[in-house]
Structures are given as structure tokens and as C-alpha cells.
Image 1 (tube, rainbow, N blue to C red):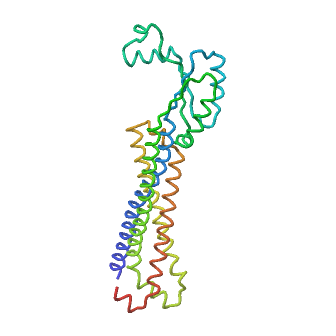
Image 2: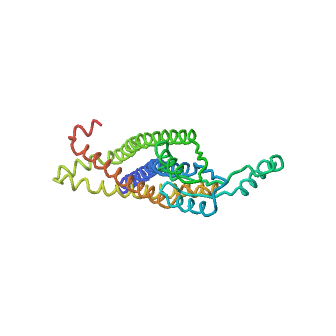
Image 3: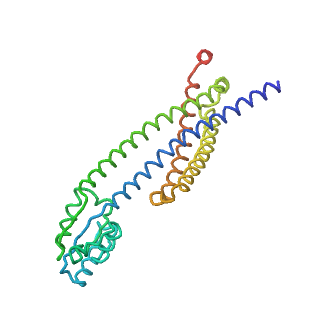
Length: 292
């Protein structure tokens, strides 16, 4: 009798371990999707904020006028960053890149002074840029304004497609994850279906019968979530070691949201699955339990 009890306990322990491992793997996948969606949002902002508008200044613009224009632009909501590049600096950069000094051929510095403006991400689109261009042209002594219109449209179109793909992937993976965890929890409850029926026969309420199964499922969900968070953390650290510049698009906010989302997924999904699985067996008669 003791040997049988020990065997049954070992089998149940193995089922819990199996459920925990399978749930951890599923939560890792869910966490990866959540993390990717959040990171894609930051990447989108980063790419847009690196689209540069070049404002060419007239040669007859005085230093006072240039300073006034700079101060006016740097506080505008569409300006993420503004850099002044003088004629001398532009000539020096060209000489370093091309290895040729155009002054030797034309006798003067052909490069104009410019403002290099990086737009905030919400203004880096075809609709908003029109208002920005209009305001820039209204500034006195502004000769020309250039911006990568085609590149901006392509970037926004590609980012929209990526966001849509990630959203669809997140929905599909959530459905698949729920199904996988549900099957694992159902198998765990299945082995104790006759105990559930016995408790029902002696007058135990459905809520009383469900309680230990829910507690166990939630416990497994928490442990699996913590393991998944640890694995995801190791993955992020590995990415950081390989490419430290990833910190420009990965912050504590994204890591925290991902960890909280994984923990909530682990608790909610396992609890719902256990609730549904126990209810299924509670509704069955003794004859039906023998047939499944």
C-alpha cells in the first residue's frame, strides 16, 4: 500500500514538473513576442528620429540672425535634435570623406552653413512634415530645405507592415499558448478525475473541489513565469554582450513590462485552464469518466 502511494506521489510530482516545464517554454515564447513588440515600438521611434532635415542657410545670414533662428527651432515640438554645421566644418568633413579639397579648383568654399534637424518620431511622416516645411521656409535667410521624402515614406510603410505582422503573431501565439497550457493542465487534472467524482459524491461543493486545483495551477504558473523571466533575462543579457548599442532601444520600462506580462500570463492562463478542466470533470457522471 505504501509502495503504491509512493508511486502515485512520484507520478503526480512528475506531472507537476512536466506541466511547469511546458508552461515555462510557452511563457518564454509569449515573453519574446511581448518584448519584440515593445522593442519594435522603440526601434520605430529610433529610426524616425534619425531621419534628418537639412536646412541650408543663406551666405548673407548674420551670426545674430543665425543664433535667433537656432534658438527658435530648438524649442519647437518637432525638433528632437538640432546641430549647426558651419561652412568650414562642412568643407573639412568633405575633405576627410572625399580626399579632395574643392577650394583648390573653384577658389572658394562651395559648401553652405546648415542646420541638421532630427525630427521627433510623431512628426516624421508625410502629413506632418508639410507643416514643418512651411514653418522652416518662413524663417528669414533660409535658402533651401531638404528632407528624405521617399526614404521617410518607405520607412513608415515598412514599420507599419512589421507592426501588423507582430500583432498577428502575438494573437496567434496567445491562442496557441492557451491551447498548449490548457492541454497540459487538463492532463494533470485527468489523473485525479475519480477523486473529483468521489468528493462530489460526499457532498463537497464545486468551489471547494476546485480550490486546491486552482491553487496548484497558480503555483505552477508563478514558478513557470519566474523561470521564463530568468531565461528571457539571460537572453537579453546575451544580446547586450554581443551588441551594447541595443541599450538605445531597450530600457528598463520594456524589461519591466515584459516581466509583468509574463507573470500575469502565467497566473491567469493556468488558473483559467484549471478552472475549465475541473469543471469539465465535475459535470461528468461516473459512467462518462470511465469512457474517456
